Amino acid sequence: MDHYLELVRQAKQGDVDAFASLYQEVYEDLYRFAVYILKDPVDAQDAVSEAVVDAFASVRGLRKEAAFKGWIFRILSAKCRRKLREYANRTVELSKELSEQLPAPDSAGDAAEQLQVRMLFWELPADDRMIIAMHLFAGYTSREIARQLHMNENTVRSRESRALKKLKEKLK
Image 1 (tube, rainbow, N blue to C red):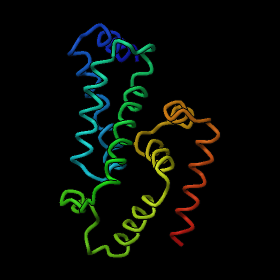
Image 2 (image 1 turned 60 degrees about the vertical axis):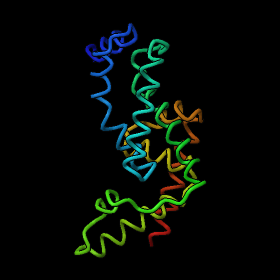
Image 3 (image 1 turned 120 degrees about the vertical axis):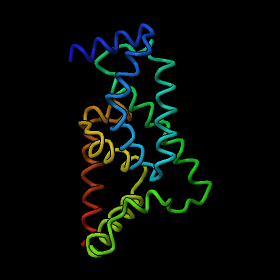
Image 4 (image 1 turned 45 degrees about the vertical axis):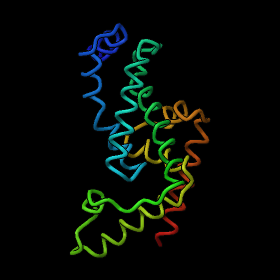
């Protein structure tokens, strides 16, 4: 942890290599989060890239070194929300890359259930999807999610609980 905080301190002082090391540590989590939110690997890469560029440009303003990961996820969350608003104005076909990630046809029951879960997930309100994705894919606690989304911690827990309950009920 001390090494991590030292990298953040160095990045805040303009050390490009230190920032690159921090980026390497969080890239997979950032990308996984963006892919699940945006459903498009290319848009996810774009959102992560934009978030990293913005983070690098403003890292000197980061107040607490220990908050780096949450801070960069907040930036990525904003980029993903912007992309989701853009989606509302265009039609999107299932990309070849994403369709290849779906289960193989030989497991038809599992594939159908996974597809149904994904479809139901996208029927949830955007904030609920964001909360579930941040918890399941980025590993954030309710407290961390609440801080990032500017919500009450209890609100985050209850929204996640209700959203998961809705998904389970619809799957029956």
